[in-house]
Every structure is written in structure tokens, then in C-alpha cells.
Image (tube, rainbow, N blue to C red; front, side, top):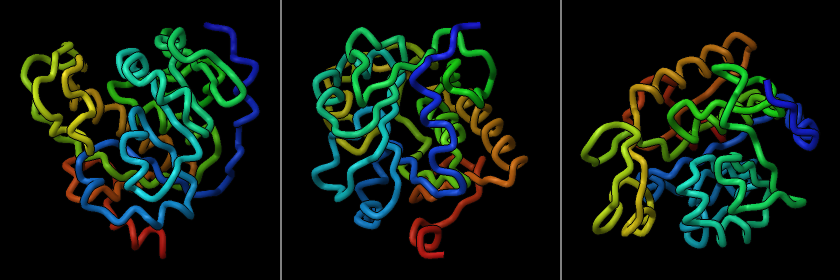
Length: 230
């Protein structure tokens, strides 16, 4: 088992009993009113920087674990003024600093890592990595948006492909346009989501899917406005 990261325990139970909004990167974000998120604790993923000017909010946390994504967005990730959790597969691109924390994703100790100082499991999607981080920080409720869970792609899951033309799978057409990305693995993602759902539920916590028109059926569905105003 890898040695725990000495800097990460400062985040343990930092937000006990609180709600956070986990913002994935699906195109449904473009059809949502995201202004209310400026008053929420937000965890953004990967290339969320591409939409921040128009979204009207800024995340308190960023999670990126895929080496290709980290490499492609190195400059932008470094410039983000928030706490950043970066998988160590791409750590050479974004060095640790006062806001940047490296997390072991190469040899995680469990299928769902309750202690992120020892590592996190990617589980086929950065969303699953972020759920482990949210669990560690003590959030009682995680509200997910932008998890469309549908992709236009060819080839096998995890296969690296060069994207020609605009990216229709993410909120920005420039997201992977002209770049290499890894095909999604929806089956593995769903398996991971079920594990996270059950672990949260066993401790009286919940994960709510407030994605507009999302195709994932693992989590309880609820409109974002109803969740935030309820």
C-alpha cells in the first residue's frame, strides 16, 4: 500500500453535513441556469475552465485525473484559483503547490477509497474520483449536474481516439476538438456509481443526479432548482 500523502488529511471532514454540487462536463450544462451555483460549494472537473466565463460561477475545487486531459490543459489548470486535486499520472504537468494536491491513482488501496490520502480509484470516470473526494471531505449530499452519460464515439472503451471536428460530447465544441481523448466506458462507470451510491446511503448520505435530461439511471433524480431550494 502506498504511503499516505501528508498534505491531504487537512481536507478530512472539512465540510461535514454540507451539500456540494459536482459539475461534470456534458453539453446539458449549456441548457441550464447555473447562476445559483455562485452560492454553492462547487467541485468542477477536468476542463471546466472552458465554460466559466459564461456559466456565472467559479468552483472551490477542481478534480482532474486523466493524464491526457491534464497535459492538454496544463496552463489553464495551473492558472485556476481554487484547490486542485490532480491524479499523479499527470503530476509532472502540474506540480504541487499551495493550491495543488497530488493524489495516488496508480495503486489505489480499495474499490472506493474512503481515505484519499492513500489514493483514489478512477473507476472509469473522473466523476467517480470526485465522489471519493467529496466523501472524504464529509459532504452529506452531492448534487451532480452535467453528467449526460451519452457519447458519440467509435471504437472500444478506453481506446485513445483523435477527435476530428467539434466536440459534441462536452459543453464546449473545443473540448477535445483536434486532440486525443480516451473513449468512455459507460458500463464500468455505472458499476462505480452504484458502489458510491450504496456507500453514501449506508451512512445516511446521498447522491442526487440533477443533470438535465441525463441518461444515467443509477442515482435519484431531482431538478437542480428543487434540490437547492428544498
